[in-house]
Every structure is written in structure tokens, then in C-alpha cells.
Amino acid sequence: MKKTTCDKIKFMLIGITGRYADKKDYFVKMTLEFKSGTKTFKGEVLPSDGDFEVTINGVKTRANLAGVSDIIARESAKYEALVFTYVERGTNLILEADDRSVRTKQTDNAITESMNTNAPSGREYIIKPGRADALLKEIGIMTKDGKVKNDKIRKYNQIDHYIEILQPVIEALPKNKRVCVLDCACGKSYLSFVLNYYMRDMLKMDCRFIGVDYSKTVIEASKRMAKNLGYQNMQFVCADVRAYAPEEEIDLLISLHACDTATDMAIGLGIRTNVKAMVVVPCCHKEMLSQYSYEPFAPLMKHPIFKARLADVLTDSMRCLYMESHGYEITAMEYISPLETPKNLMIKAIKKKEFDADAAAQYDKIKRDLHVRLSVEDYSIRVEDEF
Image 1: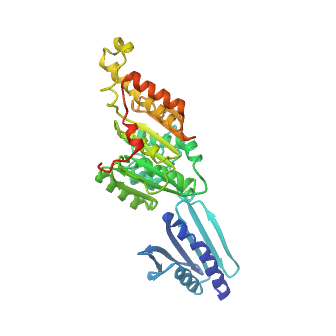
Image 2: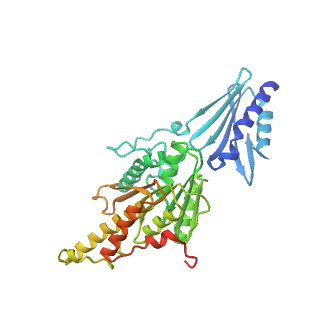
Image 3: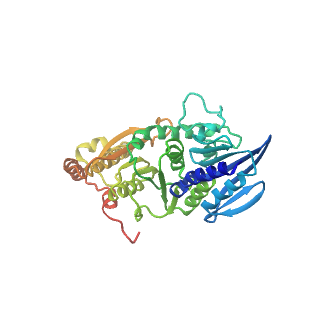
């Protein structure tokens, strides 16, 4: 290509690669295709120890970001045409050049993947096989050859429905900043990985995820999965949720099946850090059962199973009322069929105001009537250094 064409290539590459500084967490690679007659010569650019490794026809060269544009423009002089693709999660930026023109376009790189027809029937999935194969394989939903595992269909349905329910919450999150999502008692972080894919690859949101769990084993497993997927916008911290103090503003807190008072720890963390939204799915309950008593209900509570089931309802309804007292608008719902699991309650909380005196008074009265105190109160007001 002519020098004037190569100069245009360099100028336009500087513009395209300049997004790396702001969006490097989403960067995947740059690919090159030089064409001469009927022959194609391929190359790629990958990050390497703070710089980049440029490989063209098997020859490797190290360069900084500015140097990458220089190398590609210089190499272009040897060929008749160039197709350069800057790949980041969810988006391809493509530069096509020859001596007739230098042009750019942007595509959604999800739609370039071959569509997989092995999805279970009966549901139109948001996280679709074919587009999200790498994710579904990494979290164990799909086999290596691209088929959804029979024994994982129920789990697949659950996580996809979870995303469906969260759509209104996600739409309400800030649009003018990087959104931070905190997963409390994250375990293997499956929901964070799926939510990350949905928010970044599908919605193109600027987002960051933090997973917190006291188990070093699951934290290390989550780190490996993030590395395998190239999800650089994820951080996993081995810590007790009671003592964890995020270093940045949290926009959305999620917690799935955190057992007993671990759900209170998650809600408490959300309240004391004033998060904009919370979505929690409680698990087993024990704290209320050992405390509550209400004389008018004594004849109804002579069967332990009824007392235990009522304790579950009282626990979650009081949690909701407590969140309301802190200014959250609450939606409580079944998020999957009780045939799948009896632990199917989802609580969505959206911050609307600082404090609700009426809800606080109602909560205090019920506490006195039932002779109970929930741990969420302690977890909401301070973090104990000794934990």
C-alpha cells in the first residue's frame, strides 16, 4: 500500500487503540490479516507484561501501545490490503484498508459466533447457547462439545430466569459511571459470571464485579474461572462479610442462598454502605426459631414443624420491613417454582430515601411483640474489627 494509505492507517489505529486505556478490562486481542493477491498473512497483538506482543508471520515484536500502530502501519506497506480487528468483550472495531479507501466499522462480536441448536426446548434463553458457549462451559452448564448437560438444565433455567428478573433492576442502575456489583458469600460466583456476561457482553455496560467469601477454596476457584474467561473486570476477596469494607461505591449487592444469618450479613453490608439496590435469595433460617414467642399463637405452635415454618416467614418479612425502614422499596417474590427448591424467595430492594420512620416504628413494635432481635441490626450499623 502507498505511504499516504499507511499514514491514514496509523492515524486511525491510534484512535481505535486509544480506547485501551479506559476499557482495558474488556480487551481481548487485536487481529491482523494482510492480503497480497490471493494470499493472506495473519497476525495478532496481545498484552504482555504492561506492553504488547505483536506477532506477524510468526515473527514476534514487543512494543508499547503507540508502537503497535507504528508496526502495523509500517508492515502495511508490504501488502495490498489490511483487515485489522480490535476485539473487546461484546464489540469488534474493524479497520479495512487498501489504496482505494481506509474505512472502519463496529460489530457485535456475539453475533459472529455460530448459533448452537442444542438449547433445551421450551424456553427462549437470554444467555443463549452459541453466543455464550465459553461462559456456559466454564460454569459447567455445557459440555466441551457444546451440548447443554441433561443434569444441568434445571440450573441453567434458574440462572437464566434470575437474569430475566434482574433486568428492571439493572436498567435502573447509573448510566454515566462504571457500575460496581458486589456478590456477598459468592461461593463459586456462577451468578456473578452470568450477570457479568449479560451486563458487559450483551448490554455493553461499563461494570465491575467483586465477590466476597470466607472460603479460600471457592475464591481461588472463582479467580481461575475469571482468568479462563478473560473477565478482567472481576475481583475476588477472601474475607468475612461482617468485616468487609468495600473501597468503592457499590451500586448493586447480590447474595444467593447465604445460609442463616449470612443473609443478614449481606443485607447489613448493603445498608451500612448505602448501596443503591440489593437482590438477595435467603436460605435456611435458625435465629428466629430459638427466640420468638407469641402467646396468642401458642395453641398453633404446639407442632414444631409449624413453628419452624412460621419462623422462616417471620424472618424474611422482618428483614424486608427493616430494609424498608432504611429507605428501600421492597419486592418479595418466588423466583423459581417451589418444585425446584423450597428456598425460592427473592427479595429485591431499591433505595428510594434515607429513612422511613413509620416502617421503623412498625419493626420495633413487632420486635417487642415477638421478643426477638435479628442480627441484621448489628451488621447494619458497624463493622467489628475483631471479626
